[in-house]
Length: 115
Length: 112
Image 1 (cartoon, helix red, strand yellow):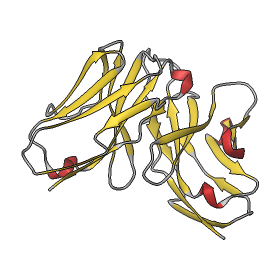
Image 2 (image 1 turned 30 degrees about the vertical axis):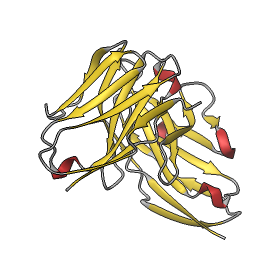
Image 3 (image 1 turned 120 degrees about the horizontal axis):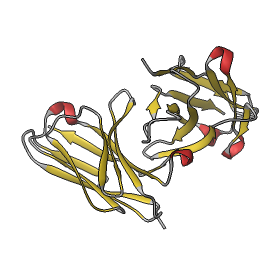
């Protein structure tokens, strides 16, 4: 069955520290991969996406993610976290084929940032 | 200008009532979606419309009926509301799958 796993429900880091949020997927073939951020009381905003090519993708707000086919992972990273990065982060996958769009989301990782 | 807007932002109602949530996008996208986010923050697609035509219906109870009067609007009507319908409902739109979708701010539905 297709699924997305975000192993860490809650992560706390200090401001200025580096961050890595984990995402693993189970899919029939390499899917399209996305990371979204949801700030409190807000909708989801797309941070970055991977379709093909360079396995290290850059996104907005200083985030990057690396696709590792052998590990079925698409981990999100940021070298130095800012207090405004505190939010919920969702990894999502979608089919390359099918003729329709359907994202499958992970359960999310809540990031807290200590000053 | 807001890309994807939803009304209302909050909706509190009694069990058994019928309610609607409206969604509008001004991005010119062909495809619109409804997602449900439960109390554990788990997001799941409910419906998708492409050019006013239903293309995804993810085993949602038939108390939920989406309606797309034109490709810029996708409304969600819910009949006979139940406690388990309490959630945040997100509307989204996309021109194609590669864009990943633009999400609205959500409607928090509370059924008492």
